[in-house]
Image 1 (cartoon, rainbow, N blue to C red):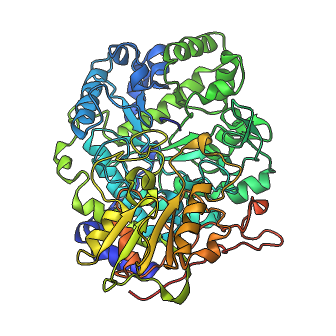
Image 2 (image 1 turned 135 degrees about the horizontal axis):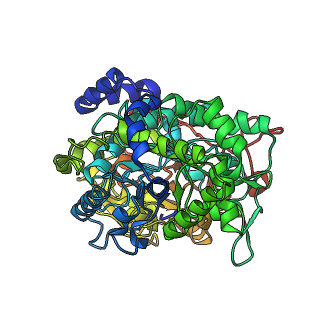
Image 3 (image 1 turned 180 degrees about the horizontal axis):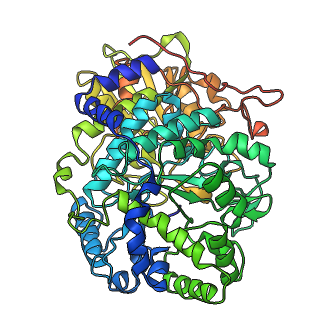
Length: 619
């Protein structure tokens, strides 16, 4: 949605007291069936007018609500803030909390007093909010192979999201990216279906705290159903006429769809996920948002999903140019809530017409509203005696040291050592001088990537808290002389050069890219530094494998650091050998662009670094 190694890892997780306590609580909490709430909500459903039911089925965006009074007037089921859609008061912790509390209080003034669900894209931590703990994107977490750690990060997300009063995050993404040119590759854990399913379910368990009845749980949302990671390059066109693939066409048969792209949802449903977001993409030419076989037959009936489906940002309108027809197709196919950022009045008016003329049955409306109310009931939102406002006691831990330590652990475990000639790594604190170069070395925005404060992310000091890689290196070795120059100047005479290069921030289709080679600037900088004779440790920041070209021979060591988030110290921990590298590639690393798409199991599989590759050294 727009603006929108095992043993070592497990030991570290259980060695953290607050996390051990949380994990025990999760194990003792039983996920209750959502349908068990139906007896509670049936009397409420009977009291609702048609318009109140339709209001529950729509989700506008905060900045597009004409008047906050519309929240109670239309009895909205939900409100969202996409990436970068901040409250008018700003995007501090306090501004967010005050805004959400105000909106929830407003929703409780509606005739039936049904509170809104507030949704946000907390896809690698509560990244919309300044000072939040921003952990590595999923592409990195896949390299940890550590489900316990992913579950712990889900808990961190839940606590920081609930600190602002928000109930719902549009995560985890359980896409299975099959072509690295896709701009959302970093949102996927792996090209391997089984790993995606394992880690996606862990994220759900962490976010929902073992059961939505937990006051500190957030509603998870598995996305994007289904096949978004399998779209064909060239099946979309940008405004400038260039080719892309985001929101494109997935051209595969049902057997392949089920084998590759469905297991992530099966695992999420088994873990009790309460919501699922339907994808923009088409399946063999038909938009997924309007396919009853996918939404109702497979997901709701076959898999037994009891929660509700939500569309992506304005996705229903992509089904057909005639909005009325598009809405009819989508609701009848099984869509329960429509994300219509500014078109909430049009949605309600049009859906009312469809019900009145019999194009959409009241049974379908009641089913959709029942599914939404099930979730609200289990979360305690329909309990008139329960305080629905933010738990401000959670502010004390927001972006705090305990949360950042878990994120730092995730950084350490996600780094993949691709090359290490003559054991140039780990770095030695006894070195006469270590020279650092490259724009990515001291840029927290670049290491966080997209979905960080802004939808597309941005370069520079995008968020407060955390450390850049350069800062992390200096903290790790305060007595070692560490010099820095973006352009590499002054490298002569150093014992080693740490050069940080890679992708600048992007999100969604903006990141669709036909050539994944290191930029010309990065290649030139590496060549210049290498000519000095100083051995180069190349650290690559990216949301997907990059075409390294000559860098494979030029660099003495290569580390895939992915998009590590706000805790650059985690990179320094590994570079200095305080923790040995344990990450294993969750994506095949191609030799050249002619190999894209490349996936394990392909005929003539011959990547530069195969799936599961990762060197190590002792800490």
